[in-house]
Each structure stands twice: as C-alpha cells, then as structure tokens.
Image 1: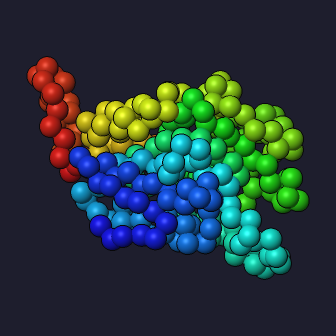
Image 2: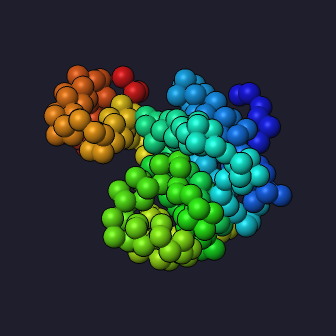
Length: 260
C-alpha cells in the first residue's frame, strides 16, 4: 500500500486499519485528511486483498474532534460549497463502499468527526467516546452529510435537538439513541471491531456488498428500494456463492464462499 501524510494504515488478515494521525490536533479534519481518506478508499475499492476496514483516530483522546477551523474561518459562499462537497464526496465513498467499514470511535467525535463516524456502516464506541454536532456555535451547520445521516440513524426530533443545542452526548447516550452500535472499554475497541469485521467476512462477499447497496437505496431520492432489493436478490441468486451457501446449509457443513 502507498504511504500517507495524515493517515497510518495496517493491513492484517484482510482488515485495513486506517488511523487518522494528527494527534496533536485531536485528529481534526483538514483538506489533506479528506483528500487522503478519499485516496485510501479508492484503494479499498480496488485492492482485492482488502476485505474490510476499521477507521479510528490516533491517541486516547479523539477519534476526530472536528474540522480544522483554521482552514475554513474565512470561506466565502463559493468556497463553502467547494469545502462541503469535498467532504461529501469522500464520505459518500465510505458509505457506499461494498466492503464493511467500521468506525472505532476512541474519544471525541465532534462535527466532521461525528459525520465521518456516521458515514461508516457500523460505529463501535469506547466508553470515553463523545458525539456531537456543535457547528451552530460557529454560525454554520454540519456540512459533510451530518444533517442527513443523523436523522436516518436517530430520527428527526432528536437530531434537530442535537443540531440546534450543539449538545455533546456520551457513549451510553449515543448507544441508547442508536448512534453507536456497541460501547466497549477503550482497551477492547480495536479487537472488538476486528471481531465484528471477521464475523462479516465469514459470510458471502457478494451478498454483503448487495446488502449495503440495498440498504443505501432506501435513502436515495428517486430510487425504489423494494425494486432495488428484488434486482439485487436476483443478482445474488446467479452467484456461485448462493449455490455453495444453499448446498452447505442442506449438507450441514460450513460454506466456502469465494466471492463469485
């Protein structure tokens, strides 16, 4: 794999661990981080050795404590549009990745950090994790998809409350609301995340990719999610993995999926 300036990567047993490595800035998202996240996701899509992804932050304090305010404090309208679209494009790659992506939230996930976590398929929170969208404190709103994904995950009323009050919630509250899938001790965060990815990777890869696509179809404008499901089910029915899975079930043995 290529090396990055703001990211650390480790590929072990098919699982790519991506660590946002700006600990002195609480891993704040600047232009280079967004660009390199986009680049590493391209590698995830194209590298067959990568089966799943975990995204986390360097150090014990922060997953990502927000965007780097020094980079956008003087934005005008057009620059603001460009700034937001860059983040949208990168986080879209994560959300629509055909391979499972877990956010291992190891501390503050605020602003763009919360938005990054929400773009991942699953969020595992350390007990010290904090979530929030405090953008109104700066006179702006979430710009990396937060207003859309938060509503999808926790509902309109509570999302509006968090956006408008700028309240920061702890991991237990995030779990109760459905923002975090699980809460674990910080020392177990990566191993727990690896365990979930490993379980997913024991399933049929094509079916996993189609599940992600089908669920995302529910939230796409102008797309009939039910019709999408029918077509994706049909795609799966035409795979060797379906034949293998059905045969293994009937023969009472473990399936040997090949992703074909």
